[in-house]
Image 1 (tube, helix red, strand yellow):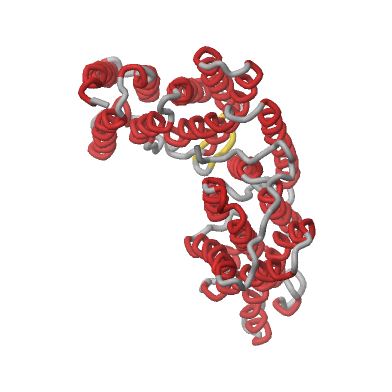
Image 2 (cartoon, helix red, strand yellow):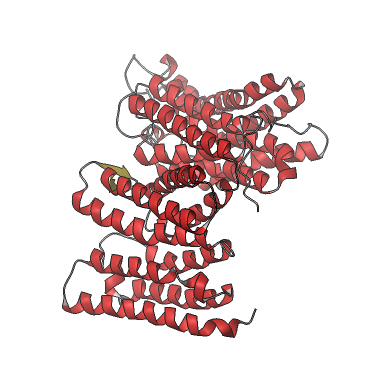
Length: 491
């Protein structure tokens, strides 16, 4: 492919985009509009101009040569204080910097499938802009995602526009059956609406178009029965999780959306056996939340904490799904990582329960008597007891159900359970601030890098036991649903 043939089209698109930025800057300086309006003008206009990339430019290197300098200029504009039309908003956002990068990545992923590229760019350009403008002006029902507030009205507008932006290109540019177009667009629109809602500081400009490209490319390769099944699966997961959270307040709005996306990802990319640890962990977390007397209280785990917690098992699932032959040996490490995450979530609650024992109190309901040697001994033993109890409970909770269903020998169960117990005790040994009772009783306790690394260590230990022949590979039954197969990430 001769990249020089793409230069005229690249020059036209570059001129359009630079002219749009210049017009927004002049409007900002002399018209004194709201910064959000000039930002969305560039956002929407630039996205619509980028729709012509697959028809004017064929080489991804040319697109990269255009995207990289724009990303650098936008980043410098935010740091040095120019380009006020883009960086004049009060909220912290790096969405402008992600925008050219996401255009290049979607162009690279959707080569020879322009309808996927057009769908992803329309969602990015039109859906996000209208959702932000309408939500900020007319939004009444607001929910919190970390330190940002979003509106239900804005999310609904995004869902409708995303559905149309995905459905129309499929309908006009492909020969897919109409039911597949409708249901695939509905599924992808619902998923990316969740991604948009929980994305922070402009990260939706990167994650939303990539999610559209990946999920749309995979779901449209499935038969109609599978598309229907995936829509129903997402609906059931949403209803069950939302009902439990509504009654218990164990997660906030952002955390609820993040868990739904994770649980559906485990369900669709793996099978019910891969999703089972996620649901068991959620049920255990809700149970201890209620037992501690926090039912109905505001708070709960938020997006960043939950995302850090589920990232290790989700990475293992993605790798296993990308390499089909890796499904079998990856299931044991996946269970170990899921069990470790559950143990880390249960440990603070168990620690609170242990510190409420009579041996730690001078009288029922009173604070610990720190002058008593007996109290000090009980307090020092509590972290180890909580770590051991959380590790044993979590390891058995995630491993016993699939072990019983499959009728396996005890070796895989013992390997996973022992590894989860070991990393839970290692976490108890590494923590140095056990005397801070108030920090331990925070609903949304921090998720430091230590827990992230220990979860991966649990997976690596089980994998090493399998490779050494000390534990057989855990083989989940991927054909349990018959025609309903996992949505493969790889092409």
